Length: 345
Image (cartoon, rainbow, N blue to C red):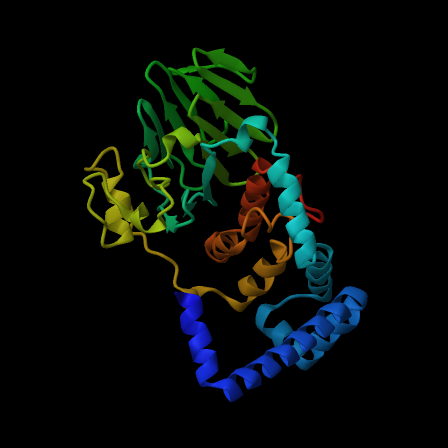
């Protein structure tokens, strides 16, 4: 039906159709020429962009030194890949996932908290939570519940995973308590729950959830089984493919404000949390814009599997751009793609 309508429209305006084809051919030719220049002589092209873009004014605005700019340029060039190569990488990592079981549905999905406050839900909605001692529910499924609180404002959050028989708490200093007793640094398995500790992360593994708390970066990620599809609740979303309903409160009603949404997921409704609101694009500084785009690798090898746009948004709003970069690398690692080089942080 659509094709018939389009064909009829083209037959009705043959001259305009030919003109559009000619314009698109010229645009495509210029684009291919520019990409060829970029591949063979990136330094010349980037230098021209900087000169014609008034680099002195840019330097004055963002207060960057030449070393930082050169580093960002090299990072962007190093991570550049052509579209056909991205497609090849997509095929490789799709057909050879880190786990054989990932080939079959239901598929896993990951959500995360970046920089203590910025939230990326399972369906890529961008939310935020205030730094507050009030405990909020990040995700709940059956007898499994993941909560977050900030007992110390300047420290990482305290993460608690509760199951039917076990409660595990990862404290701000990354000490781990099981049912109120500290377990030290050894790996243990208690019933269906496994706790793995290293100098990089603390990982809690249950049949339906894998919680990763990075010890060197402010990143908390939650990977859930595909069997939880459409059955999750909490600030990390419902995991049903619809980002719009990630604003749903426990009552089933859509929250009108972010403050209302966060308050509704507090375990103690009497606990007073600080005000919270989304960051306006007008609040993002020029310096942050300049750093975030190359930091995450616009043409990263991981782009074929994990779109960088939500993480670039997180980079704009989080306290440290490197938290967003680490979150992106964490997501890429879950897809089987190793750390990106250069790291950028």
